[in-house]
Structure formats: structure tokens, C-alpha cells
Length: 123
Picture (cartoon, rainbow, N blue to C red):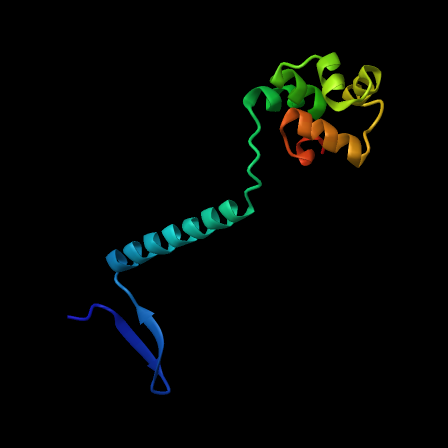
């Protein structure tokens, strides 16, 4: 037995009247499909970087990304300076926001910290 009513116009289907129980099942399937599409898009755009809570909280509290990541990795300014070949004073200025690093500087820092360069750029 067909429970869907078809309303025609000029001999062609124009509207379908669907019982509520069928509509609810279809609506749930459509919502599931939409959720799956949103998830697939998020996976496709995933850059792979994860921000640990400590890094996120430090940045929310005002730390620059460099300072937050350096602290999270347990490095001193001196250790980071030695790992990158940059001066401790220069790194301190970048951390405090008094100076910005060039792309080459940020790349050195990112490599030393094991994070993408974008993770060191304040938004």
C-alpha cells in the first residue's frame, strides 16, 4: 500500500504528501548525510596540528605563540637560541611582541619546536 499522496499539475507530479512517520525517518537520514558531509569537509581541511590545552590557555592568557610553545616544550630561551642559531635577546624580543621574526626566522623556530610555521603566527 502506497502511503504517499501525489498531487499532479498538468499530468505531472507537483507535490508529494508524506505521512509524518515517513517524513521523520527521511529527515533524520538527511540530517545524518549533512553531518557526514560537514565531517568529511573538516577532515579534508585538517592541517594536522593540534594545540595542547596548555598552549591554548597560555595564548588566551596573553602569551605569544612562541612563548606558549616554548614553555610547553620545556625549553629555555637559551636552549631555543642554541637550537636555532638565533640570539637569546632576539628571541626574547619576539616572545614579548616587541619584534616580529622574518619568515626564515619563524621557519627555524618552527623546526626547533616541531610545529608548523603557522602555529607561531599570532592571529
